[in-house]
Image 1 (tube, chains in turn orange, green):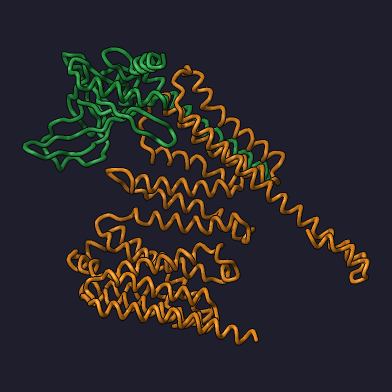
Image 2 (cartoon, rainbow over the protein chains, first blue to last red):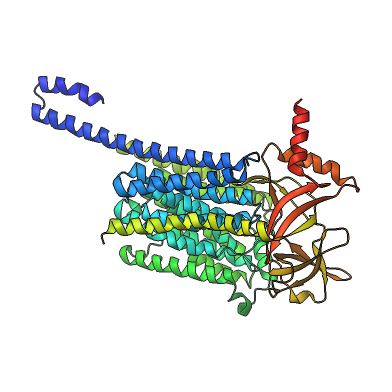
Length: 428
Length: 194
């Protein structure tokens, strides 16, 4: 620390007193100690995860030459070792985060390893999704008993893998409704993390992994009315965006705010995808019958998510009143209306384009107003992407597309130039 | 009782469940192996991969379908009980399928409906619960070569030896002309190393 080197000089020149110098030195000593213990936690966890994964890979080799008795012994060895380590941690070193997280992470992999070996010995066919489900259920209590955030993160990855394996990657696919129950069971830990350590790295990882997991898995509810899932996804991203803009997240860096990033990117991506007419033509031909649709999982998912997003929207709206200039906050609601219109009229594609354009323009305006280059360029990026999408839209004439591009390009230069110029003027 | 003791007790219970699951898997299979009846299922092996459990030979069985009367009685992925007999050539043969668990006096295995095929007649295809034979990673590719050679020769019979008891099944071995595929691969590997 360079400041420590200067302290002697500052004391000598009587700029600071000896007492202050000691205080400064103590402060940096303590801070150094904290970062060291954090490093210890990180390396402890990484070590345990690497060893655990290594054990899994060694097991996957399938040791044919080993007699059955030995194989069985090795099935239980890492499991019992992991349990003993966790027991030791709970009884004597419950305060050590490194040991608690490391031991729990190791046991997590040992449980998977032991089921794997038994499956190998007896040629148990049970598909991968069943294996993952058993594994995750057996490890769920570790999150709470060991108060382990690493286990919670590994568990989130595991249940997402389970849902994907069951509903996306296996043919014939089946429902993975257990995922939602398993996800709910992980929520209390997330909540306690939010209460106890809202600024911790574990919280940041959860803030990314949790919305990412839900985003990946929501598609698994698709059955025969998959068009409706666009409503579900729009409401989900709307919900993420609102959560990301809540008081809790407002003071945090954008890299800690998975909700805001996923919500913003997701909303725009879906709107851009649906700015083409093909989807709306298919929707009208699809003949969604209200009485058949209302009991479909897609409809239930869409209703629940829209309702949740509306509740959060109202709650946040009460605090800072309704702000028309932030269309991302309520884009999901407009989309529901557009979707209903789109079921009967061909105008929906045009309305989506209009919505994206409005979001782009209002975002640029907000960026300019708040003198925020990030927001300004995000708005410009939305406009640019819309232009690129329209480049391939053969329904528009070449001249229209050309003019659209030239306008977007000029807008990009002018907006940035004006803001930078204004900033310079402020500096002088 | 303080919180720490409660946590410890719950942890011990969870540990016991974590130990119980693999132990129960072992115990059930050992029981089938020790007291079950053996069946030979004609096979067609190939060599895929599982990220956690390693390489295995995936088995497809020749005796995997049965003629049914009514398609709408059966659903894909539904659990069924397959009643088995032994044919004149010594291999397993499907006698019938049932949705109700048969009496223990007959030989049957719990399986799933793979799919229903409807052409001139309606066939129900079965997915057995013993389609994976795990092998050491460096032996599995050789197992595939051995299979490719044997599959062209109609005089060679490849089959899975399965122990069955009360609906549960354990795959004991995969044999090519009465010799374990493990032995054949081992011999091939050692002769190719020399």
